[in-house]
Image 1 (cartoon, rainbow, N blue to C red):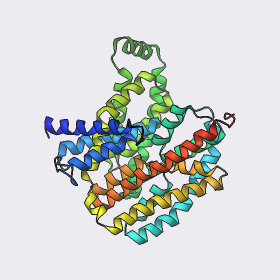
Image 2: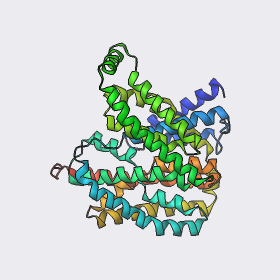
Image 3: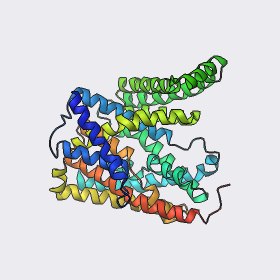
Image 4: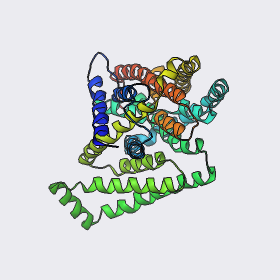
Length: 381
């Protein structure tokens, strides 16, 4: 690991905003970051040694921060959330009900573990959908029900993933995940009470005026502590990052903390994770393998079908299903864990990532239709 390698990675990270800023392309940020990683990595120039321990650790931190930011995007403080919980829960249950037979079929055709497919097909990405809703100021019953479904499905699949992909003692991994969640709840209530004391208010006020970033330091300490606990039990830091982000979302942190988190996460660690992820993928094995290309097509088709069917069953329009088919954090986690524990080869990992990127096209179509129809719909009660 050297400054030259970090320089290359940061340059690769700039490709994301450059491509995302081209109006004719309208591609998500991560597309450029992954493509840049492919160019400098295993499938391209071979400039990055993805086995370097320092790079592996920095990428792990980026993964934890990605999950942290995903957790902060959950609409947990939305006053209308309770009213949409029933539909969201039913839609999530139906997503799993349809994903199980589809996942078993895909596992039979590809030889990959069925739980991986079940979670991918049942997943929806709040990290993709929620920023679009906020950016476009969307409102209405359909938007509320769809976003609640996406948030619940995202949370359930992310929490279940480490157990589904565990290659060690499943009981120990499950206990570790449960301890992380319980600790997150204890910190939420305990630190929440502490934050209301005069002493803490005094220091937070000083932090605001003097630029100490105290809330950021506390949040990072919380995140890293949960990651330490998770990895001690063989549980992925995925659960730790997600739980810490959800707690921060429940706290309703000030805008300055959100900006700081975006700065430290989206400014360096998260792009580094996606660049390194792209560098690990073998796109030669994807492009020259009919089975891997078929895997990509099957995941995309099955995901869209599952989400559109669920939308129609719970009486949401079909474009809600297209919007809910968004995939980002969970497929990245599947690939990261799958490559690490040898449940996936680099060609299969590339197929899953490409399927996730294609799903963003479906989501864009669904969100555009949702935006168009939300303008004619009454605001959510």
